[in-house]
Length: 87
Length: 154
Image 1 (cartoon, each protein chain N blue to C red):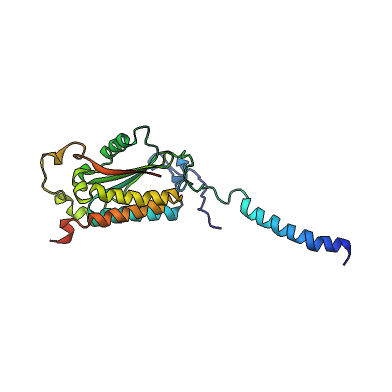
Image 2: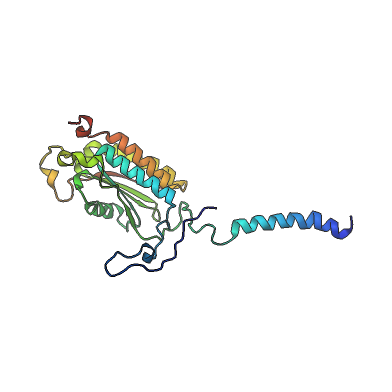
């Protein structure tokens, strides 16, 4: 092998492979959505997801609420419960 | 490499029809992929159907007073508020709030909600928002069980 051939095989070929992989990974447009990482800022607009309104759940809608005390018809849904967590 | 179909808008909307969907300008999958959205949708719908409660998910900033803001949002979540359960996640502040109405709180005690929140925060810390939400919903709907009307159909 001549010097030129040696350089092509042992330096050029690996370099070509690396460049090809780098292009495949970093080419723009491949991944538009940024994956959320903990601690990262969240600059999306607020969004609200709801369940589908129809289905078997509606079947018992007329008598789903239990007969309850005076607070059952409070405007805000009565005394609220729940939990809170941070990460 | 799969990508969402990008349809060119030719603005076929007329005065009498609704706006063409691509006219809206915002991509539906800008936060989550369609696959993740389908998981969220299924989890919300199935837990609401199984329990008879109304689970909704708010994803966004909750302001300085996260609890008060979450309770405000619960008041606007629609439907029968006593049976509504709101999961409010603020990834920017790293806070999750679960708010249950009066009737929902009887089926889903605060302790059970706290347990679900604990499993959610574990996934959130690892960067898995959708997985955490889906698992939290599953835990809460398991805890709430079936409503009396679904247990004894008549």
